[in-house]
Image: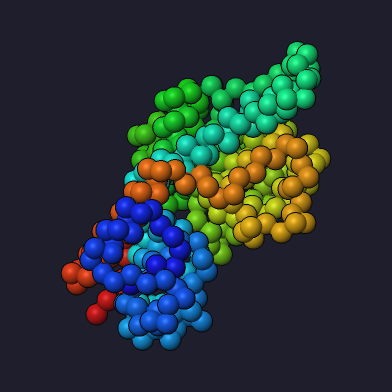
Length: 308
């Protein structure tokens, strides 16, 4: 059992109680039957020579860092751990960015620290209550955002997801719409995986469809938003603000165009990194490994074509 990236101690202890655990630099890593991975890139150059490898288990939902076709060709199962406390944590992270931007939390802190108290009278903060929130994607995390915004703040929520039926959305109090309808919202929040279809899904044209007062939030994956186009939209006033937790390159390079923009609130890919979220995912990883060890098929298997 090779754990490449650190996971919550509760999960690590559960796994260690069932299996011998080694790190990626251990000479015996090539003999591992299961790999546990979080954010590190994992391609055939790393696992291709692991002849005993049976499964790769992703700590989290997104698997864009794993070369699944190569794993499939090698007969290796790939499973992830979506849902649970992690979905709630990411949803709360997205809403916290919305509130941080609307309430201009960083700017208000500066007024106090820099003795600019009286400038507060010239500022009008934004409201999440009653806002129109648009969701790109309507999976577990987006559903949690819809619940927080809809039931908690009285927002009108619209969602775009071709894979979810309009009836299912309406049953949960969310209005289905096309991408253009979602982009016309006051706040747009992204909740789709990074694939070749979604790469640069939000680019110059899409940003041009947003309102000048609109806020964009991305707690999904970097690469879905074209960062250069976003920087230009923020600089020109095409949109009002953005909250970005994920980047095309992580960590971002020193020349990232978003660094210099005061209307862009940045976060180091930690929307889901809460105590409950990390513990829940690590224990889910342990449960998936236990299932595989019993010779059973995990519910979250992503490449069932490897099965006999």
